[in-house]
Image (cartoon, rainbow, N blue to C red):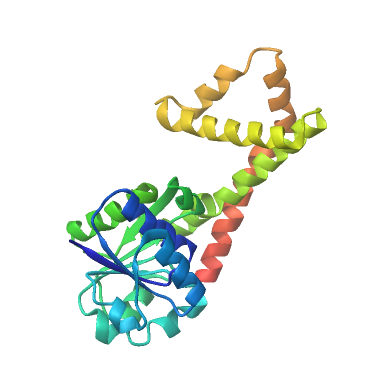
Length: 263
């Protein structure tokens, strides 16, 4: 039985631990968090063991760092002496593999950018392994994060772009859902009905894009009839600069991620 300890037991850590339990991976789960409320919620959600001391949590093969970036240095002060040659997974935003290696004293590191849909098992996680990391360790990281959605393995140099797209993207999509619902309300729909119609439409279109095997542009064209309602709506989106605005949002978020990573 593999064992994993979570340093930090917040929402994302809880989602990952719950995914491990839900998918019957057989991992033995421990966590340490100075917040009693967070620790209690983690325990109730996944049944993991809550350790009163950090050193107790680190009696595991895998360490998953899930603290806020500003708390990382404090959280890992004693780690080098305790980690040894354990596999370290980090979802701490903006903290590089080089910095993680210096703080933890190991080179067995995978840096991960998950996103909030992991909370409902539909996340998109991008993994960046340290140079020369064993395939077995990369496979283990993928096994863990596949329990909360899909996984890609990408170079660390691409993680700022990943942050701008899939990391920040859920907020952009939720903005779009809100805008769709607002349009529906303006056209006469009750608010609750408009929100459900908008959310299910986005969910269904995303599922179609993922599973149809056809180009996204072709799927869009299937909906557009010459001179029809959808073509009129797409023209309105084009006139408002919709596509450029979305692309710019991703680029700006990626640029901000790069800025934060320099501090």
